[in-house]
Image (cartoon, rainbow, N blue to C red):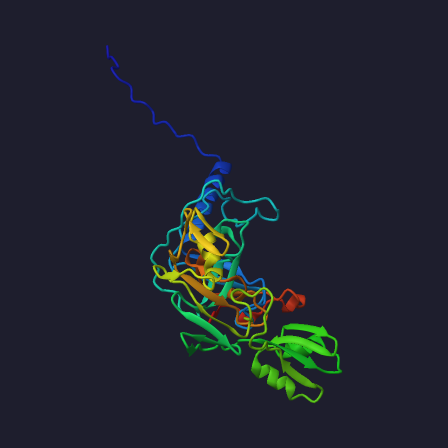
Length: 360
């Protein structure tokens, strides 16, 4: 008689995943990869305002590199993936600020240079954490350690004139007794236009303003420039400054110590109280107090930058809200991957000539 001392077990087939589960795993993997990619490398942003025209247009979609200046580690980790401030199509917050990390910056392969276009979180927006504040794009006019001054619209850094962007614009008042159609301005690539009594207010380059002035039916093309000593409401800094005549103003550099005086405190109070992570800082009776003790001097903890739009007379920028802290820097725009003109006809909405054009 033959005895079976053992029996070979048949191979057990593992339970097959359902199609729904496989799709769920694939979706989760895609979300994780996309989130990491957006955080560490590149991300797309849209231009919502005309502050950078004509260098960048409303409706431009920019491809922004976070590698150039170094990727910033997350500050608000409790966030719905692939969102910013709110959940898509709603006003429901997409994050919780119950947990906040102090940001670090990974090494980049470039530093912010003068005249670089830069994407950053709007520092004057207090209702959101730093990394979830609205994204702005402006041109870096001055870096940490520079002294900036504007005289008659010309920017000076450390006493030397700064090269002006090629497409820099100003506001002009154009007088005419004719009604000028939208097509007239579109043919001349003038998009920032408002009809007023006696003519039009428009933002354009000096060259295009000169060309308008040569037309028979145009009366005058008058540059709307503010004068020295003419105080502009809402300006950041000293009384008597304005968008065309500003400064001089020192841009703070990490490790540099300034003396606190009645003249310097109003210029750097916002930095010290809001951006420098000072837990016990306050200003009372025109004096700075740190940990309850009056401070006669202050040493900056990070670098700061001064940003301006190329559309110089239609840009809410550092002239109005002050410096951009280094921990608010997002990245460097590289090229326009899509450009949409929302006011154009259906078949003209895509600005084909701007597709994959480099940002300068």
